[in-house]
Length: 193
Image (tube, rainbow, N blue to C red; front, side):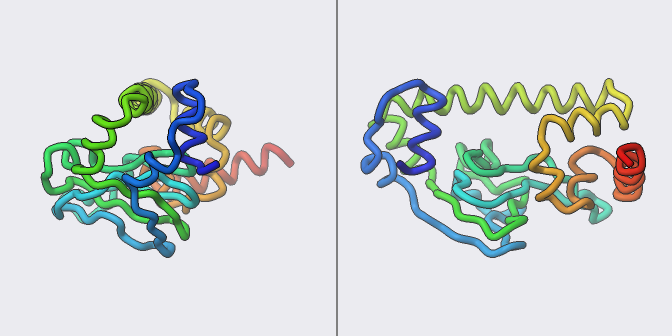
């Protein structure tokens, strides 16, 4: 069974959605490591479902510093949702951190998918609810927790990121400098020895 269909079943508890029909709305795409799937200030055409690999969503500030806002591993979705829904230019860049395979859907097919397959309305509502809750939790953790405690919690909840995301990019996401993250990691290794 295709990973997207498995994910739909898991999220909705709905048995056997029509795999062929659902997948017909998507394009399979592959990207090498460091490829840009979406450029900042360019028309946002696609919503991506990660089959294999890792994506990041970021913007570049006035000083030319990249600020990572989100990651997407297997079975996660990524786009600039506001730009995608309203046919605008993206405020973000989406980049592959690893060789990545995705399903891509454009806005026209997305609208058709939701109209023709009612289970997908329920699926995306639940995906959005989970993403929103995770986003709020991240903001709360950054704002309230001491940095070392935040790092420890993040490491325990998302061990895949620690192995797969380059330190400089992970530091940007956590709101740390790369040097501070390196220091935290060094202390944790010393503590384990």
